[in-house]
Amino acid sequence: MKVLLLSSPVVQPDFDRIARIPNYGLVSIAGNIDDLCTVHVADIHALKDPKDYLARTLRRGYDLVGLSCMSFQYHAILPLAKMAKKSGAETVFGGYHPTLNYKEIARSEEAGAGLVDYIVRGEGEGTFRELILAKEDGHDLRDVAGLSYRVGGKMVHNPARPVLDVSEIRRPNRDSRLITEGFQSFGIPIDSVETSRGCTNGCKFCSIRQMYGLSFRRYPFDRILKDIRDAEAHGARSIFFPDDNITLDVKRMERLCDAIIGAGLDHLRYKVQASARGIGSSRRLVEKMAEAGFDAVFLGIENTSKENLKFLGKGTMSNNADKAVRYMQENGMIVSAGMIGGNPADDANDMWANFELAKKLKVDIPIFYINTPYPKTEMRRELEEMGLITNNDYRYYDGLHANLKTKHLSAKEVQYITWQMNARYYDFEWFRYTRVKKLYPKWFLKESLRLVPFYARRKLNLALGRRKPRDYFREDLERGELCKGVM
Image (cartoon, rainbow, N blue to C red; front, side):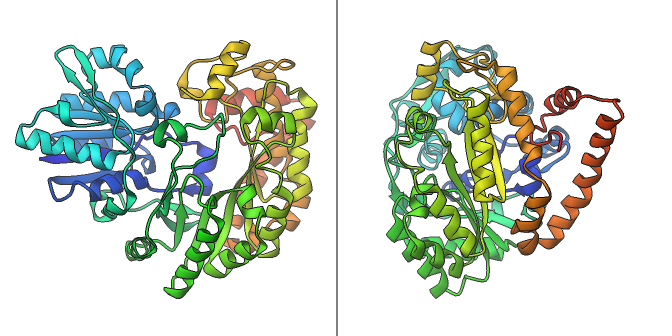
């Protein structure tokens, strides 16, 4: 049997320039089925013309084509599934969106038209493996937990699969990648390594609970170190840890840093997403991270308002934001911070308060997210009851598009304020203090040479009365480059 696993081609253009990271989940599945079949992984989000590439690749003759996506990427995998079906392959949908919306997909026109043969719900390493075994040996698909499959014109949904014991998950197969170029962070080749799965926090906007339940499962350190070495052997000079909440266990994180240093792997550049509470709880942890080679952290600060934090389900989890940022800055790390605006009680002043907090903390790369009613989350149910959701087209559920209004602002106003904040943040003061220029001078110079003339032209056109800010807002909205704005 021949299997092809595809990422979604959809990316957010502004983020993609900072970091384009290969899909870890697909090579993890590949590493857990490669003894049963020939498997290839294609990270087609690295390509300018993914459909042309897929048309050529499908000529190799695959039996199964797997497609992974989040909600805002789902629409883009449907034409790819159609191409796969036309080539004679069966299709397997997986990832967050198919897992959470499998019943809706099964009832949709796409499923009815035969684009979806199987849906792998939850973690794919176990379910995909058992699907292949069942097909090869002729076993009944009813025994494959976590699988939805077609019987005639209907989809049958098997019981859910319990979360996996991560010690039994084999390491990823990076040799399965067909596309090995184009992945970088700040211009440095990058790959992903997973150290844990799941999170036990109760953030109401998050889909992790629906994917993994309230679990936190840790990989053994020897496995993590082997995975880092393998990523480096495949060309990575920077490593991103995509864990759901890597600092949930602060002491473990300290030991992981010690293990990286002890293994002589501290010459690599590590990047991670982490909670403000975890990072801010321990200066010692941040010092160890810096010693181990961590140079950038995406920090979930979320909001300045205690009322909003309560609504988001964050409680007091962001109370350590000031300490977290200070500790990272003292250790020379790039601070990226996620700030969520467009919450039910927000007016314009509330939204701009996030901007002022980022300025006060001197965050290197703030990301002004817009509250998004992701499918099946507790927050979506609450926002539906409030009547605040304005858009149910999942193409725009990327955290940057406004899909809801607040009690004081329309969706368009939420969008416009967020757009304004993105460019206004990067002023001359930012150019003076940002650590990006010190750690990644070549990338910083290249981006400066690209953006400075861009904004200079905008300011000139505004000064001459040729254009208005709202003109540029509509232009960026149409292009999907929502981190532009007007300086």
